[in-house]
View (cartoon, rainbow, N blue to C red):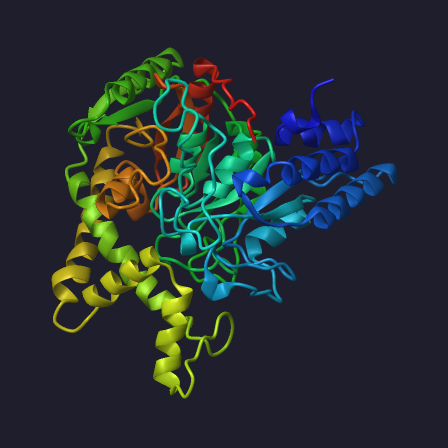
Length: 498
């Protein structure tokens, strides 16, 4: 019999329904996996009782002949950006260390209502600010992957799992959970998915509620699923999406049946290849993978067309003005007064307490972005920076609108490289920010985009391909990624060393 922890979301769901195994057996197996892999530091909090309670409820419902819920028997990991009632939720930051919400985020509640159980809270870059999971206040996540060429990360230097959803990506790749939640502000679902050989989709902005999700940049943040394959992502997304009156940006639309609609046949679809994404010094392996992706989509029946997104080169600079500006505003609430860390010096006044609390609670990358954001919003610089960046954002969105006149979807690489060693880029913020060069434009435009594994590089590390779609066309994105998945035949997985 297949090891239960090798099963994905669909296999677990269907197996519990048909009695091949019990939900309790599944939860017990995954709880043991989580407890045995603590060296990866993927989980900040383990919640085995939550997973077992949901499993027992699923087993009891089946025994009583009740209609099974969509995710009955499926245990998942929850990124620590989602507030969970009665369970510590820190956003990877000391300033929220020990914070126990008395409410449940909308997305997590939807998953529990669908029958899923929680294995624990997953590590992440602090306040989702990072591309390597090295900014977490509770230690970096270590990727389960190792290089096979004797280079950095082969036997000594551990690799980055991507960020900010690095705990999610590492846990799924290491078979600690079949799926997990992630959030994507500029690529934080897609880049870690590419680094660890899994799939992850950022839906259209507004598809999933932001209520109860610790805010980074409110006009960009979007929750989405991460899982081992495209179908599992579709199943998860159906459970996570939906209108929420408590989120002013939530889309009041019915949730499509994405799993039922999956179709890897792309006859009649036009796939655009943006010429501006062929960046200088792109590794030959990334370019070769991109060409294989083009060939796979042709084989699926799609027509390939070249398109132009002329303002792409301005996307990263605009993002690193807009996102820090919104972060500066959102993180002002962490002042040591109402919740979280309070670190007043002896005899301190209110301002001293604010300053000391934030100095102790925020990490260097968060402080850097708050400083940038406060600067670009300050009197005398607002128009020169934030207003200009907002105009560029509008131009980038218009570029996509023009592209859709000649194509239905876009195909690009997900990241400009495979996973790098921890510490390799942490001293150079610009080098780290460049990891998001392919993912940021679609985030600025609020479009659905997904990463799917396409192959391995010469060092045996995963490489991902990204499909971007029109607003609300998650089905098209999922279909194209399914076509790639079927043709790539990606079955590689990290060899257990932990």
